[in-house]
Every structure is written in C-alpha cells, then in structure tokens.
Length: 152
Image (cartoon, rainbow, N blue to C red; front, side, top):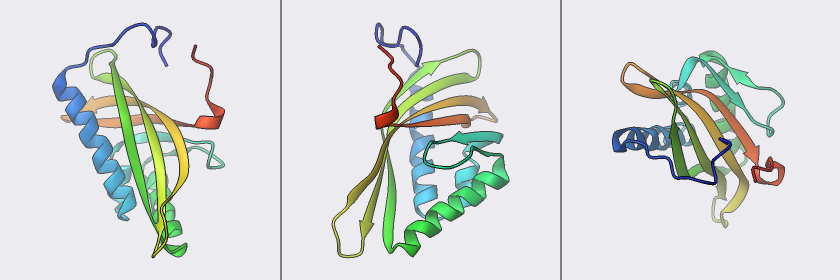
C-alpha cells in the first residue's frame, strides 16, 4: 500500500472505477464458471499472479489459463461450487495508463445440499495497465489476512 494510504482518500475518475469493477466482476465470473482462457485474458500477456496459497508464481497467458482450469476442476472434483467475491475496491491512479487497485477477496465454497464455507479471506493488490481501451492486470499479489504486512 502507498506510504500515505491511511491519511487521504485518493480521487479516481468514475469511468476508471467503473471499468475496474467490471474487470473484477468479469474475472470472478470467468474463473468460477470454467472460462479459463477468458480469465487469463484479464491479465496482460506477461501478467503475473503471486499467492501464498500456491507454490510458485503463475506468469503469462498459457500458465494463467492452466491455473484457472485447475482451480475450476478442483472445485468440481470436490463436489463444490466455488465463488470469488471481490469487495472494498480502492483504486489509486498511477502514471498515464496505470493504476494500483486494492481489494478484499473472499473465496466461498458451497457443497451440494450443504452450507457455504469461507475457504480464504485475502487482500489483493493489482498493478493495472490500460491498453486497447481496457484495464488489465500486470501483476496480482495476494495476501492471506493472517499474513498481512503491518501498514500502520
């Protein structure tokens, strides 16, 4: 997070905010419904996904696609419907055509006939770039809530 994150609200134009929300909504629906290639397409061609839940970073469209395929298949094999829930999106403009987005990400699993359960509560930090009229993720860093850096 920026050094002065706790001292000021940063204004972002409504169009950028709406487009970033649309990106996150599309991402969630894509990965949750098995559209791995479309999910990978929300990243830049050299996009990176870093998460402590997985052994190594995932980089590039082909690896991102395989990652999303495995994620979707894992939920189905477990007999669960898995949903990504992105909330509290905060966008900080960068230089021309760049921004950083911070958000909370919950992963919720629901087995057939059973109660939903929270699988993970995390924070995501995305480095975004604007290209061809759409925002894409260049780098996503996921942090589990029990492993947060002290930002105070």
